[in-house]
Length: 215
View 1 (tube, helix red, strand yellow):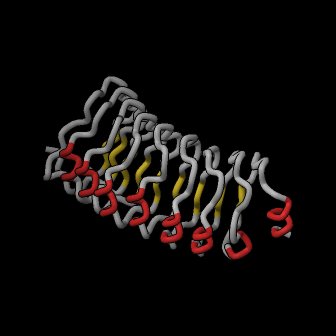
View 2 (view 1 turned 90 degrees about the vertical axis):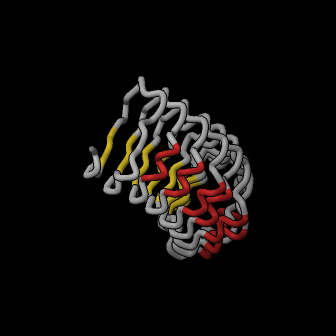
């Protein structure tokens, strides 16, 4: 069998409609790549057998409508890439079990209308990319719980304001709200002592008072 397999790359398999069945013996699998499987409509629930999986790439799986509940069994996962999964409208609440997750990309998940609440449990999360999610209009207060967060990309969203809890992101090094045309302020910006990169390109509603605080 494939018991010794550590990586499985199926990116660009455009005729793949349903992902393969995964054996409970595939305990060595660390990387699973379904990038650009544009016609894959679902992940088989047997994906939950991959207890040691660390990287799951579903980038531009444009026909994928949802993630199965069994994804919550991937407790070793550190990197989940959902870039360009246009039809996903939510993430399973049970995904709050993924305590080891460090990187999450929701870039171009254009059907998402809010930042999924399960993310507030990802206390080891270092990178969150929700850019180009043009239906997301607010950032929830619980974002302040993500104390490990280093990079937060909210560019090209419909966000109008940021919660004051954002000042709790004491390890934040990069914040981008570029092209958030209705955003008027970034509260507590001067308290973010580790911030190295701040993206404000195209933020045409920012007030003078905010710009003065940057000086």
